[in-house]
Image 1 (cartoon, one colour):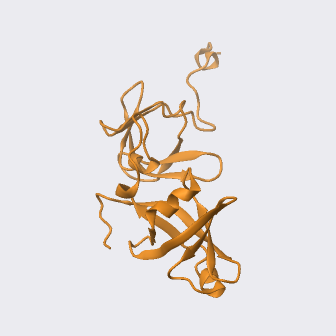
Image 2 (image 1 turned 180 degrees about the vertical axis):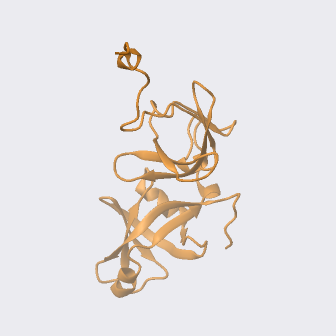
Length: 187
């Protein structure tokens, strides 16, 4: 199954390892409802090939225990530990009005909410443990930077206009503007 740029693959889980002695596999899910993975039937590898065909699933803390057609032994399940599992974006239900999937943000322009200044384009959405961050490619290229994906830093997402309006916080050590000391009398 080829990957289409018009239908990107969405990360929905990761194989955490084998479970029991009969070849079941534990999957850590990244979906709001873990059992949603069972509805996809086939989970894909990052290259678009079939990774796992789910025959059955039951919920456990932080994910699912699944029986898959491709796995018959505990050793085979353990060998898949760390495998990332994807589905096509088109397989996901449409979000409600004024909602979106984080993947829909990739490629959107980022503009300063007050000045309209072009701040770049969203390269990816990351979460290193403290909340979602938008990775931004500057307009002229160069080193990417991160914008916290919070209501304060990114108050408006306009999917139809393909833009995120942002109010980036000051960087650590960045001056906030001139102070009274800057305008003191000369000696």
